[in-house]
Length: 504
Ligand code: ZN
Image (cartoon, rainbow, N blue to C red; front, top):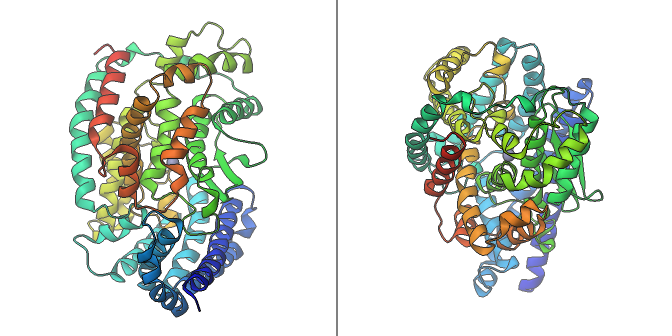
């Protein structure tokens, strides 16, 4: 077998594994968006089966032999080539996957699917007890998963690495400490002037069909196309895809509030643009997705906040919003609207939090996850631990578990170690934005004119097209010139923005 034939053999096997993983994504999308509840039990088995086959194929000795045989071929190719990257990343995936027995991987998938369903109904009835056995199972499985790997400095490192490769817990802790030191005084200063911003214009009666149309008009400007994307309602917004030409966004609507669906849609669109912008040559390979959740989140937060909550964007969008809801916003000028969408209001719900308090929602989850893993308290006491920390960090009283500890889907899916990536992404979004502004100084002018393609194409060029060819740190280095999550630009952005809005 020539080296090239061997490479093609590897690529063909990886294409089928990729197909199986995309089928899993589709089953997950269907479960969250269209499946009737009666399908939950058998869907869990289906997802476990597909996941098991994918895992067996990836960890098969054939893949190991092919990788061994291709080591010289890889060394002969440029590091940045698709071929060398495919071999390199596959070796990383293979070695990692081999640590985890298929039986454990299958059980994790099966429990996640059942648990997601249990979470949805427990959340609907605000009943933590109904979810507790599933959470217990999930944490037990996570501990078994951690035990599959060489002991790390902290058990949480193993879980975090799944979502943000190469970033240890101690680094995240240091980043979060820096961030807290900067934003807690800022939040306190804003709280003293809470009445300076009036956001009543965001509340009223906004019929859902018109909200959907308005959101779609924004998404189309960002890059959504009718022949390559979908946009559906769901309980917990997310973005997924089955291929470069099939990007799926979801959002949720409140009839009495226009902000939730609009900013949620912008956020998910940022994820969709990252995936849609990956080079077509990477389709049906393990390189055809974002490199990490932190980098992914840098894209969603960039479109939601740096673009979406800017004065420039609403110079373009506000007249369209007024036209979508005739008579409702007639007396609202750009300045009032801009201030309203940036009002700082410590609240219960992470996904609806303003940019300033958002980080504290994540710090709380990061800390609780480590405590759940170490058994710092019995899981039955999690709501108490949650509520106490909400009070101390954000000063809010949690009225029920639905708007408290059960608000997020992540733990039901077994995503422990995922939350920190939200803040890492926010930090990176400011670093990337600075680079975009340096490359395109008239970016705000373009945005005010409703021209978003220069930004989108720049992001595609410097970041999206690489997919998963490079590690998160390598990718960050390529875009920003630094391979670290640097809190500075993000704190600078928040300080400047809120000092102006609240006249601090
Ligand atoms: Zn996101």
